[in-house]
Length: 384
Image 1 (cartoon, rainbow, N blue to C red):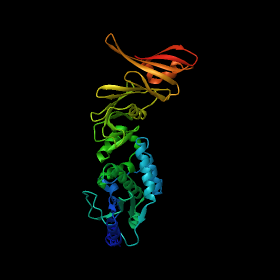
Image 2: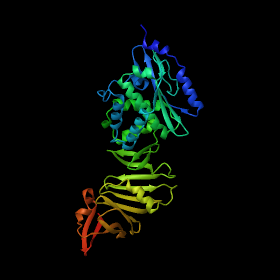
Image 3: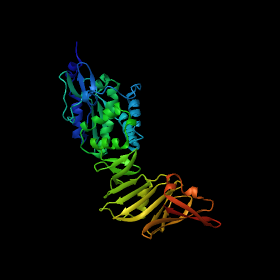
Image 4: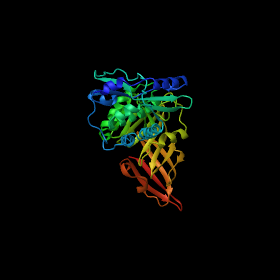
């Protein structure tokens, strides 16, 4: 009887080696490859066999490996919508750019798996190779057809996830090796995303090597300390985009529903346009945001009735995206040693205090309705 192990030893390894060599000569960058263990009693993706193997898998009832992979990746949307969407795009691209080995061919070993203990009854074979054409930034995926046929549904889905995650990791960490990805493949295959909160998920991404996490339009620097709780980012070092030369400190006060964005020492003084961009991604109803630069408060913004309005440090109106608010001023004074903040709001005539203050803001703002004319009414909002 011929064992799977002996079968793996008999596979001819010339055709695809020449193919990969021709890729290199043509300027292709031969990168990551998923590995398979071909053993006497099993054929399994290395990612799943490590750490004693994973014995409980998600969504095993879905038999099509691409459909199952799609659902496994979508399950993480609630924690990481942008990255999950990127994973799904990469999966669709991969599906349309797979090249299968012909009969008798196998893939050359990429040797990016790191230290691996291969059981004596097994052989480590290349299951897939991911290559990049740097000229047009396109990718191709060479899959070993014979190994794919021997894989069960779990290993097939895990291999697809491995290739998708690795492509995503390369965007953050060029030159990365596949051993960084294998723990995350096991997590996506076997764990329920609902068991993860934001803090646990960000810590996991950071350990793997991912550099950034998109949080409401901000790029959280995962190499810097961060604090998260109950799905909310409380403190982090952030960037607006990867081209930005400076980083910002984001702090969220849950008790006051107040976010403070502090420009770093290397940042230039934020313009109003920059302030609008910085604040717009952070707004929820009843939310208050401040932008500071070198301990000086520059702009404040209050979310009102689904929109928000921004005033500069002197209280003069510099912008509005609310259909209710026509104008407003912020007044900050010191009275008897106490700092008092008043917001004077000009609105449509029909507006009431309940339109302006709702939810948790009722704890922090008082509202007095002032005089009205034919077209508008003035309100005085004061921080309690």
